[in-house]
Image (cartoon, rainbow, N blue to C red):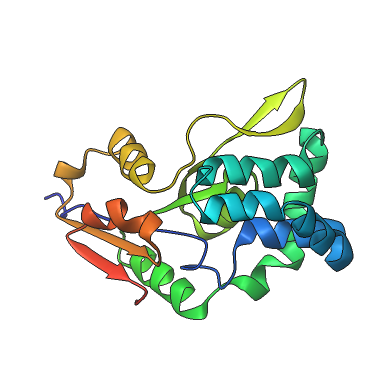
Length: 198
């Protein structure tokens, strides 16, 4: 007899973590002085984002380009691994980790769905035994360009990517956990949605 299938989708930044992991990676790489100098240079783009003159993806690509553009993929992946080992544990929310463990212990499939790039989310997912649906970075000549390869995995794109990867009609229960408007479409897919609570 087959047991009912159940699946849980987790947002990453602000849900599993206490801070934005992309910004923390940039801070980790450049140090406090380099990070804040960069953010000052990027301030016009951040203002343009707040006033909706540019999209979230455009602002994200400007930040990625400034901090990581031109970096060789091997060096970038090594940085992401080091970040996961040294910094990530301090960013993780204990209640989120407990909920992930709870779902895993019940035999549920657990999936991370995030706008953050898989370069620094995949190590976390592998450690926790989770699937990963995340943004992808464009690579040209083995170097990070700072652009995304495809749409930013946020908002409607989260739901699109989930539907493309899973036949949700085959699951009896669908859990989803998020903390922002960018998770709304993902939460709407759930039979059991959790907004800022576990």
